[in-house]
Image (cartoon, rainbow, N blue to C red; front, side):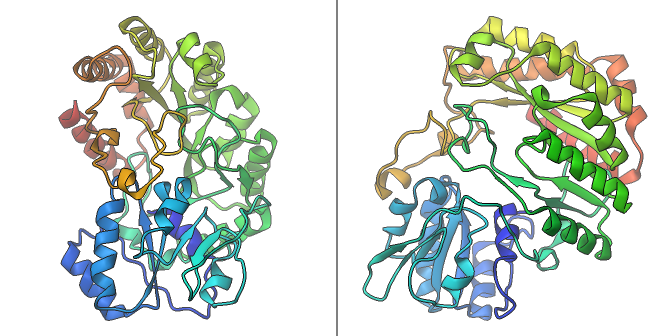
Length: 424
């Protein structure tokens, strides 16, 4: 589910009728999307874009505007990081500086003046920019029911359907390779969060994916969320992403009682020099401890490794692989580093011409460019080696099988396994 669009759905007042098109999950081609937009005849079109699709997105918007007179509002990674370049395009009427955008509703109501988190063009073509919101985040009532919930899948889900839930935005850390290291970290209003959980329970949603980049960014707050979930007897099953160095046994125990069944941990690398060069702190012993806590309380754990960061060698990569294979982790995900918009490694892209260039080298699935002394073929071989060494272990296979609790989970793991096998 596109979390950006989901979150801003709550920012739009009940004065507006809203329709959602998720062309990817609904497998719609361009003509089908065009027909839907034309049939809606919207006053505004809010488009989620990216550095990989910005050129084609704007071409599509330009063609649509010849048939439907709407105002185009863009959001997404390239928009948040390069808003002034995107708003300069004649086909774009406004851009959102972040989500949720506090001023979106007042902008849609055509109120004059500045609107927080929005840059727009007035009738004379002048740019009007609002300030960035930095206070506690409020989403409003998210309109989950407008999204094709039944069609969404997630490899770690235990029950279906599932929906994402956000408790905080961005991350307080500043890892150099991360695309959000320059985005303001904000907590969500706690009362609003639990109103939303009550609403999801009424919608008969059973499974949540806590979509925070770091659920335990404030470890005391994450514990309190777990306590309130237990107290309210919400009975959701859920997954989350946590930083290992901010985990203790109490948090894992509370998470389990609150319904958590899987936690993803970003380990990235065990190389001290690479970690230091990327402003990342980590502790190998702490990682092993939190994975042992998960094993103790019956929570599945996914370790995420990032190979190919600048400075990576065959030795550092194999050291990381050996380390994760020696832990009690349940699952392993191996990514190969590519530059991301917003990270300190990304090119400036100071103009639309630079943004519209072919950026297929930024696609982490294809891995067309290496950013270290190892070749792309060597990095792909290392990824394959990591998966084989990790999963071809009888005791780990038994541990994985022992965790299965539902047919949905079994089928999803088979599907994910087949995709992993074909990929490697």
